[in-house]
Image 1: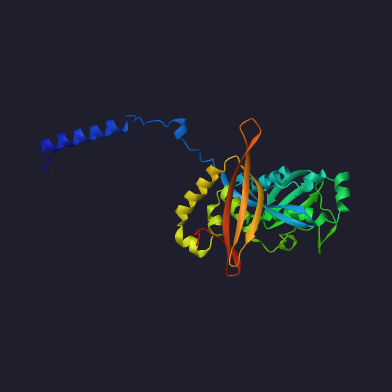
Image 2: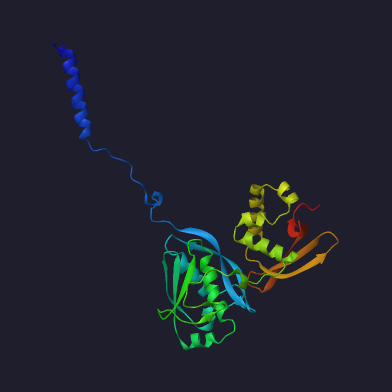
Length: 287
């Protein structure tokens, strides 16, 4: 069967077009540097809890930190070295003791501490176990870290420690954390701290049911951002509580220095706190 000449010519033309397309370099628009997202840019911002020593107990403090997949343990130790926002809260760094290295292997974090005269002095301190668990609890807040092995000059150190031994991996101990019955003022302070950290989800959970019915979560985020902007550069000054039969009012004075003349600019805010299921909650309905 002969193929018509017209069809042969058409096939030759199509084949030629295909060869030209294959051998022709196609140009693409190049990305500007600002448009390029590196796959190595894995940094994330999160809120973690650090533990400090004060008045024979561990004290919690929320801290906003930036980490990647490989350096969570080092970032936590670094933030402990910065100290607490509360000058009374302490860590081993306040005792003149440094951490030489931090390594995470198979869910156990190895923390290597200098053995110095300051460390020897801390051994005789009644709060020595707390200083160790301020490190342990801070690190084990991350679910990827199950235990912390403390090393002294790179070696295990035999020393009894609250029913444990310093030479063994230690896990979180919540019994050492200060646990007081929160007051209405405590709830407001937690509420404000969460807002300042932009943890609006945690702050929203401190509202009572009526307030959550009145404010959707998206409305509350607007409220939180507005509060941050209005209180920019202000510091909390004084706080007091007025008690009524069925609720409490918490008043807070904020202050900042006005420009450069030393004059203090003040602003006042108040929150209504009610008990709901025997737990203090913030009521924003004004009912």
